[in-house]
Length: 335
Ligand SMILES: *[C@@H]1O[C@H](CO)[C@@H](O)[C@H](O)[C@H]1NC(C)=O
Image (cartoon, rainbow, N blue to C red; front, side, top):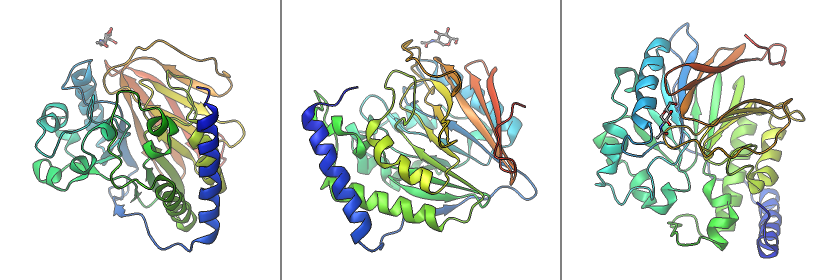
């Protein structure tokens, strides 16, 4: 994971530019906002899945099936997708059959016919990004909602969806044989500083009891890709400054729960939507690492004013890990 000297220099310039822009430019833009409160007198209930679109292969269909069962049991309000929605190279256009083969015809359970709030992953950036963001897809399947960055207001909780792919130096300086669709992202430094500023001001304005940030890339992870240093350096200070409760991501094809012992932030990886079992796990303090599961599955959340209950499930629907984050005492406790 070591960055080359060139990457270090570029990254440094980026940090300085970003910090300057944050200081000097008044806030003008705002992230698009959506509202999706809980049903009356109920907790907000949702599923989180990531790294899934493989036309049903690599157990994608089995995960989808279990999501349908758990989704019905919980009577979920919506689904969050942490990105890498269509492998290997995103969508080729709005008429790419992969939209049906990997999404519409896979997540067919009645309980999953809810809005899918989705971000883009690095694999999505290898295709036609505008196509994946296009409202034309919503006409094909009304569940689909994918934007680069946006805010989802669930009243007791606000989710801040952040486009993390443009933060990663490697895709720009060392893309290998891959081509990324950076239309709308260049010039990169102003894109990133605008985005950081928007996220910072949206978090600052939030009055929600819970604040959770969703992005594709890992921040803290013991998995194959490991930590994303760029996000650790420039996004984490913003998360800490605004007392974000959790950061939810995919990218590593596993299920994982890390509690950062300094900030108390919960890092939740739900990237087990299809291909998994990379079986390379990095050493991590067991004081922080509450779950590492190197196979397929997904996560559920049930959120009330006082508690956020998270649960991870494997491909057969078995519960792998349960945790309740308490707002009142701010101390996580087993349930
Ligand atoms: C599908 O899931 C089963 C049960 O966890 C596992 O044994 C199998 O290896 C998985 N298949 C693939 C292709 O990952």
